[in-house]
Figure (spheres, rainbow, N blue to C red):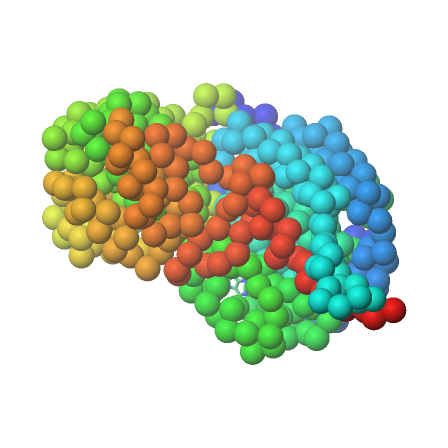
Length: 480
Ligand code: NAD
């Protein structure tokens, strides 16, 4: 490994325009070495109360700032992120493990998210409804929903946060963001860019803490009017129940178990190459990662040959090292989960075609793994693996493929490869999923909707729908 090691900053809370260290801290671990590289401050209830108070006063300021000015400030924040991207990307790789190239892409792509929502800020149009009688004017206006509590996870420390922050700020909302405790510094660098761009006090606040305590406090607090969460379905359901109790609006971007259908009439080598790249990106810790590989019987051997070969080509190592295409898993829990899912699948008769083991004894490295003959009763065919294990199975008919794709309660992303335009249209229509990408991987652009159905949650984090989630509709009827 030839990594040059930059310094890693400790991360503090950001409340009412002030960075704040607290007495309670949690170590930040480099997942490639298991060495502690820094500390993150954890909020006490008093810190959370101050963050909410700041968000309340920040909202009163920000909602009155003209959309044109909000937009300008957001663009400046994007510019600052762009200028700092190299440093931020290195920090992200140190705390999260993903290859530096992926951290760079995530950091730079965040500027596009900010800029897209900055533009949308200027398009929160209302309308005029023709009245039934003379002298009456009926108008519809859009107003920011209020202070937002946003919860974001460790797999994309910037991408998950920037979608929520940008949409909220564009709409005129203030935010208390609970960032990821395990990968806090790159998320804090994102917040710092907005702060340095001149965001008024209290408009954007960043806290870390004990997740269940922070969410219980923020969701129940009367000042908070909207909840946005990205994470597991189990936690999402818990938070949705709490939010429902307090009648808070919410966006839930939860787990998935994306089917990837490969029909025999597809360009099979190309499908194998693109699916392997998508599967092992961020070591499989991606909510839209292709998960159940379903290949038409006639194409199985060809697909597996190419897919295994692509998988074996992936160089695993410290994400800061040249040439590394897959880093460690982000935390010990994922490593353990991979070992358990693999043992369960093999116990049910699965054949390991490549990988299947932890790499080394330091760092949370797990080999990119391909399994065949995976019994449908195996845990991996029901639970989101969120890691680098790809189970490949076969199907015989189109209907069988669609039925298997729709078998699980998840509905986030789905993929299919075929040269038949009829099958493309039918898959696009019949798959129960918030997003479907056919013959390529085209999800996650700021201008396109991003979100799931069924147990994968509701609401969108992209496209015009994402801004809707932070706006109230008001109807005013006046008689002159
Ligand atoms: P987890 O379910 O405990 O946590 C998932 C995320 O939710 C973390 O960011 C965590 O800090 C947060 N969280 C947990 N309990 C919370 C609470 N009571 N209030 C507020 N936030 C809370 O487990 P984990 O080990 O971090 O991840 C396990 C699973 O979560 C993964 O296998 C994957 O299925 C899912 N996950 C999904 C995404 C995504 O992008 N949708 C991201 C991270 C994790």
